[in-house]
Length: 361
Ligand code: NAD
Image (cartoon, protein in one colour):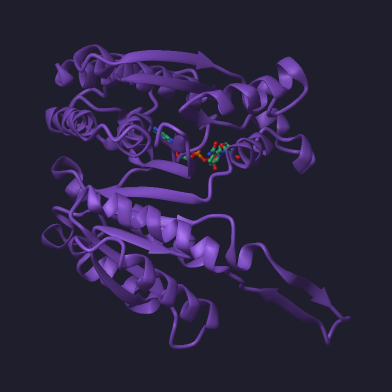
């Protein structure tokens, strides 16, 4: 298969962790006979320094041409006091808008070697493997009217939660397609006992489910879902929900897995003519200026993002599983970075990348 991938290392540890993620991607391509066409672009603080823009036009062009984009992280301390429009983080909004990504996917997996760093008891969290699919461009964060009116002490504030059938339908289909390649269960989260947007959500998701007869659908109220995530996280396969519920639940899901350096994410939009989803893959963490340039950042969030890319954008399930298995082997070996508190001397970013490659074979 031809894998056309744009790499945007960004700032700080972004450059260090993407270097290792690309090393792993290259190993996978060799091992499984894929042709890797990599291009590299500027994004964030480094792009401002070189071009004056957080997302240069050239980066936008490259992103539109690629099948998938792998991003590190953006943010440099020298821009901390700059106005929002001139900050590196503006590049993130820019690239998401250019790609039209409307879903954020957070895989939540627990690894045996890290089980003790989960806040939950081992027997509850062990074996957890789910994806939280969050609608990213609609709902209360974008609805109008919004704002604060009136003077103290009589101010009044309003936000609007709005969803159209189209917005619900497309994200529901994404969830069902993901589930059909996994354990075939979708948990759709809403608050349909109170909210009209949720009633429409439930109706549309139920209708979409009819097109995926092999996938089981359950509807679950958001308050119950928040509870079930900590009581019995193993029961979930694909969780799909609207923007604000997803914002909250995906952070709750994240803590199940332990360190921030471990967490991958994917933002996904429509499909290319090839059938591949347009995707932007990145670790959840930022540019970590406190450890940048020291070869000690954990690259596993970025490497896990590569696994997500192989699975979601290219449908390469076996390759994705090989990366996940290799990550697990490295975690079990204890040769990991300092943030995971290894028993012996911590490994460097580069050593972890190399170990993952070796484990892939
Ligand atoms: P951060 O995620 O960069 O760092 C938080 C803490 O976690 C730090 O102590 C850091 O050393 C540690 N950490 C993060 N990733 C790690 C890794 N891979 N391995 C080991 N330790 C790791 O968050 P922050 O400090 O709030 O933000 C720093 C900069 O990153 C800011 O400019 C912020 O705007 C930006 N940021 C960017 C993104 C993104 O690009 N998606 C996300 C969050 C923050």
